[in-house]
Structure formats: C-alpha cells, structure tokens
Image (tube, rainbow, N blue to C red; front, side):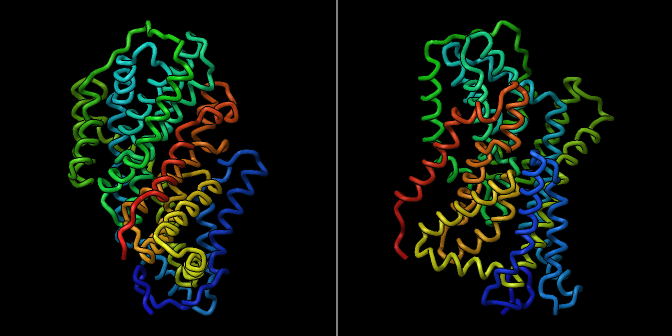
Length: 436
C-alpha cells in the first residue's frame, strides 16, 4: 500500500513501536540534558533533531540508505511543510521590518495610553492580548510589557507576580491566535486548513476564558489605582502594518499577499518616519528572516523524521493504540489534546510540539472525521496552555528574569491558560455533533 504523503510503499502496515525510537531519542536528549544541567536551553532543539534524524535513518536496516533518504526528502517536500516554511520566512521578514520601524514601541504605548487607571492590571492583560495578537510573539510581548508591569507594581503596591502574570496571560492569548504566530502557521498548515477558519474556531473557544480572566484580575485589584506620568509617544503610522496584517488575514486575503504587503508597508513607514534609511531595508528584513531559520530547519527535519517513522510503522502503531481507546469524534479530539500536551511538556516549545504532533493529529482527525480547523485549534490551544504554565518554558523564564521573580511565584496567577484548557474541554464535551 502506498503512503499518501511520501508516495513510497510502506514496509510495515501492522505497526511497529520500535519505529518511534527517533522521537524517543530526541525527547531523552532534550529532557535529559535539561534536567542534568538545570537549563532546558542548553541542548539546542535543532541539534537534538539532527541526532534523531540520524537514528531514523537506521530504521528498516534491510532497506537501502538511498531509499530512506528519498522517503525523508519526499516527506520534507510535502506541500503543507514547504508552505509552512515559506510562511515562517515571510513572517520573519515582516517582524524584522515592523520592529525596526518602531511598530512595537508605538503599539505598546498606544495601548497604555488608553488604559483606565482602575483597570491597571486587567488592562495589562488586555493590552498584552492586543500586542501579542498584532506581533504574533509571546516572547516579544513579555519583553515589551514586563518593565511596565514592574512599574505598575511599584507605584500601586500590587504584588509583582500578579502584574507580570497578567502580561504572560495576555502574551499567550495572541501567541495562540495571531495570524503571524508560528504556532498558528504550524497548526493550520499541518492540518491543511485555512488560517482564517482556524482563527474563527479558536477564538470562539478561548473567548470565554479571556473574558473571565479580565474579571478575575479586576476583582483582585479593584481597590488599586495607577497613573502613568511619563509621556507615552506613539505614531499611528507605525501601528498600521500590524492592523493591515490582522484585517487582511481576517477578511481572507491570501497569507502570502498579506505578509508581503505588510512588510512593504512597514518598510515605507520606517523610511518615512526616519526609523531607518532606504539602504537599510534589506538588512532589517534579513534580520527578521534569520530569526526564523531554526524553526524552519526544525520543521523540515521533523517532517523527514515523521516520514521515516511512518514508513517503518510507527504512525500505524500509534493509530492502532488510539483506535483501541478512542471510539468517537469526541474521543479523537481529547486524543489530539493529550498528544500535543505531552509533547509540549517534554520539549518546552509549543511550535515544536505542534510540528511533531501535527502529522499524527492529522491521521487521527482523518480517521474519526474531525474537521481540520478544529484539530488545528486544539493543537494550538493545548500547546499554548502548557507552554504558558511550565516553569522551564521560555515565557515564564523570561518573565521571571525581567522582574527578579521565580517562575513558581508567577504560576498561581496564570488564570488564562487554565481557563483556556477548561473552556476547550467544555467545548469538546458540550458541542453538538452531527450524526454520521
């Protein structure tokens, strides 16, 4: 029987758990080195995946190496993988251009300028949502807002952990939803769905969690007050590229057109406002693209590993395991959620978790007739849930470092990830199903 993604005859259709060895090797290396060193970023993920790829080439020893390389190359070159990598590159170019143009600072200052005094901490969460939705990065949002959160804590007496938790919660909102977030790109492309459809599905699931989070932060800090005395300068032109990206994607403009248009506009704004000279245009775009090299290479390596694992029977074994425990569409959705959650906890990287779990989730969804947009949403949501609360994840480590806290001091106030998980579970349990 021919594998529909690689175009190569599969050797083992009964399933072979030993074929999952490359993934196990990666997780053992990544987690083992992280635990041994106390730093989960000592082992670069890309190095771990290169080693795992070498192990994957050792599967099916009776097959020629050239045949196995062909399987890996076909899997790497699959349409959704290549499209995802191109989108990563374009998103990086846009990010580099708009950041150099001063878009980040103007967007932050614009949000803070409309912040009601009584709503200081809840406002931090809302502004974090807007900025992360615009920029597509939780790390960038935390870096931009953490100093503001520290200032609010100092001037109002509100506990620092509450203020920075509001920032982290807002950052995870956009990281999960933004049209230019690498997690959204990976989730949509691995499932072959339109990003606008994924956004709509995802937004409806997490909206209750966001609203309740605002209410909780308001209740915790209702008696506090805050007034910004320093001048918050912003330029609406510098915010415009983010709005173009957001609106263009929502109305259904092709993502390539949206990203190219946004990048061009950011360059024009940067030059017109004196942020950089015409001769520097290429450098600022290249800098943004370079920031996406690692995730692009990882995506290709993972695709190659999954192709080899599939050909050796690893995916069939997982599917057999799931079939024995899952009997319905609802069960399949819980299976996808559990799968990506486990991978994110192990890798501490939600994009990598989605890239790894995506192909398997696609198989599960096809088997049990789960809509691609729903699977993409669940992948992104549950990867973000865990990424937002694990103490060794980049988001909490960064937030703690910027505010002299420990991740464990922040975790008790991370209401949004928990509520996002509860809302998603409720959505799975209560959603009406169409009889098949």
